[in-house]
Image 1: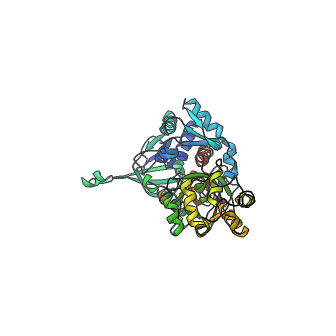
Image 2 (image 1 turned 180 degrees about the vertical axis):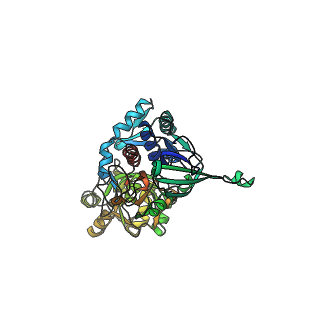
Image 3 (image 1 turned 90 degrees about the vertical axis):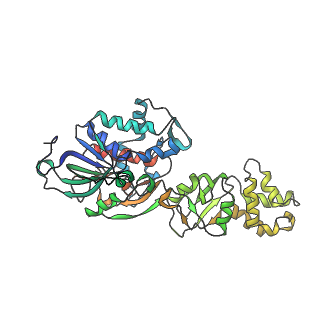
Length: 427
């Protein structure tokens, strides 16, 4: 029965997984190892596109230090079970068994020495070894529940996704039917639509009665439209270590000035905790109490200028171009005034600003460049131990489609592997 067309003219599998990304492939190989007959469907023309582009093409595939506090969601406890059952060293072991060379960067981040293709090839090889079938260019047209006869819980209809050349020559898309006992939604989020991201996972969740936590672009650069935006754009290319913070959290990481706004690890991390209209704070000189420095130098070197004092701190000096721009922006009226002739209150005010530059982003660069999608399927309606829906037997949600968002640094991949593993153990 499982290897033939059945009476309803569709091919039956034990497990059908929608999405050939990180979580979907890991679920597939895990289920396949249990002897389950697994089909992975994806509308893209290539599996694992986001894997290939991640980490600048080197794939930051996990992190040495993975804790629940590295993840956000409406239910912060949801991720604990899967992460504890599939820790990062399990995936590292698989990487090493495939003799993939990797290295550690700051904060425990692990990257391939050569290419992200090494990770994708590993996953596909593991899938092939246990008979997993991967079908690409497969557009999901319909999903519905079945009578649960002969192990069927779900029926799916797909059609071949036609390319521009297909359409130009008048090709017609034919439909294919499948049935399965377990259906896994591993479709990812809305991030980077050029990679084929779509909202079908959320649509399927709603179809089966699930609630969605509102989604938003995350791990994404900030944009600015006011005069601050003009200042930032003029400094494009400058990077420096800062402490970026808001009322909820702070990160001591580099910031990067770009033609569109502020990027770099500090901004991407902070974006996970930012809501539209909120102010952020950037400590441009995190190793120095600028107020204390200026007031002390006023006593010891009263004829010095502010820019001289700030430029002399060679170990922690601001880049010259940034210092000049900040001078124009913050103390243009006293730029040539000796410290002795500047009131302590003004020096204190300037010090506070440099140690906590308040900015209000106009927004972010959105899904176009976001590394992940914040929000998603409400986790209170999903089992944290198996990823199975609490509303529909045999239906599973894994990876980014759930309301679980990790920090920058390999955490979202680790969530993909962990959620794929625990679901693959049971589907």
